[in-house]
Amino acid sequence: MLQQILRDMYIDPELLAELNEEQKQILFYKMREEQLRRWKEREEKARMEEAVLRKTARCKQSNGKHVQWLRGKDGEVWVWVMGEAPGDKPYEQISEELIAERARQQAQKEAEELWRQKEAEITKKFRDAMAQEKARIVAEKWKIEIEDRKAAKLEEEKIQEELKKREEEERQKGEEQIRQQEEIRAKELYLSLKQAQQHGQHSDDDQEWEEQLRRSKAADEERSHKARRARDEYRRQSLRAIQKGRVAGLSNLFQGTSLNNDQEIKLNNNSANPLLSLSAASSNIWERPSRPFSRDVIIRWFKEEQIPRRAGFERNTNRIAQWFHG
Image (cartoon, rainbow, N blue to C red):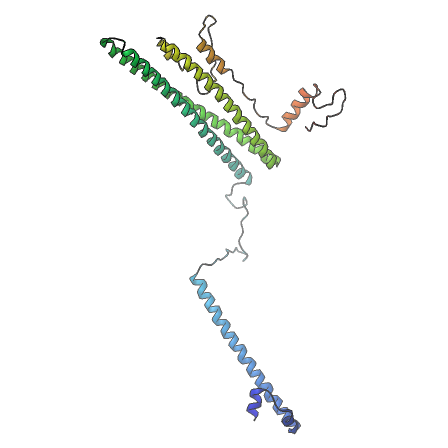
């Protein structure tokens, strides 16, 4: 009967009423012992299950990938601040190197694009000239005697060698010019990016830089277009002179032009050659002035040159015009 009560942890009220006070105390004591025993069993079982789960988790971690933080001498997670560790470069130096590399890559990209255009022009120019010269010599060979054909062939080879030599020279000059332009452009881009970083106006300066880059490219294309038209006209004049029988005009075909059209042509006042005049005119090309180095230079220029001319003021008054935002 006692075992059933301890198993169910319940006693009928009528049966409890029949027990005296001592029997009730003994019964309650036994029931309390049973509760403690059950609680200890549950705690031990839970502890064993937790140990098994912990052991299983350690086995899984040892077999799989996991992350373990590096800790310093103080036992905390180890951290590193850029520029403070021994041997680290200063932040300013790292920033300078990044800006210089960005400018160099941009200039190199522009130089490669410009060189592809130049190379295509050079190849087309010399290919057309060689084709015209070959056609002229072939036409003349049918008119001359058999004894003169060998001399015509030698003349053709000589002219072709001269044209190839001049083509190679112009290619070398073009490569050197592209390399110099790349270096100059890299410096300009570096200064522009450096000023943008110093003033902290990244978005506005990037837009200004892109606008200046667009204007620079437009000016370069305009100069290239003018030079190309001058060369085409010069070539037509020269080939026309060659077709009339003046072979000496071919040797002067490309002396008046170059890749950059910056050589100054000195003309003889008594000479009436239109070909040399056209080459001299092509060299007088407008060049964009250099970009100001700082804001102070622009302010000083405005005060010294523009304020005396009343730039930015309303007419007949000393008030600043509403449209002026300088």
